Image 1: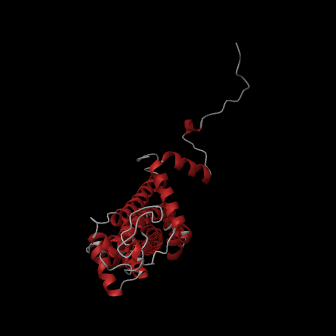
Image 2: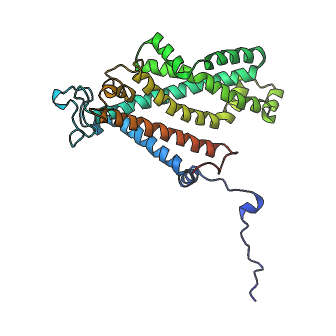
Image 3: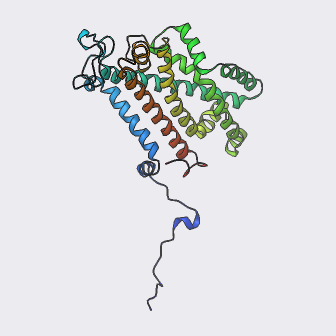
Length: 305
């Protein structure tokens, strides 16, 4: 009978509840394998970035060029998605519209969430009258429906892409501050924060060194969710005529005007911009879900794949 004495047998890490630290590449591969919907969202996000960056090379027509011969042209070899009521190529306008959606989505979500993060951490750290005053302002802003507040801001600033970014950034501040405030309230009572305060660490050091980094995962998830929301909000504002200027190839602007008036005559005017909005927003949402499951230790290994 063969003896196993003297032979070291590897002990599975799971016996002790330990897990070897994986590299970023290993974590990324595990994410791709374990979160199929999240992978789909990531792929669409990458495609959107590529389309936006290389729009002049991807589009086959000038998105601003008016052509009488191509008014309501049927989708075909020359005009993949057909022509609109002014003879402009719908495919080229959707490709260039990806730039507007990406710029508005990224800038509005990052600016709004970053300001909201700063407001939340300052409110919690100083507490007392500061926290009370900040929360009452947030309550007042949240009382307005998001789209109504954005329309009011756009009415004051005027229609332009950068004004859309400003309006949506302001809109996303209170919701972000409210969510992150709850996280900072828990972090404020952690031992490492109390220890830092006991040795005389200043307010700025405690906020930047201890509080903000430990809620950064939640911040990234909120940014991802708001990014999809910013794209559909920009489309809604453009559809209502208070977003991007009418001549800009915005997906929401393409849905309004001629698309809504002549949808029975040329259904592709509404179908292709609407499909682009649906796919992109859905992709960002499922990517946000996947990131939440991965970054939140309480949800790790759960959620739809």
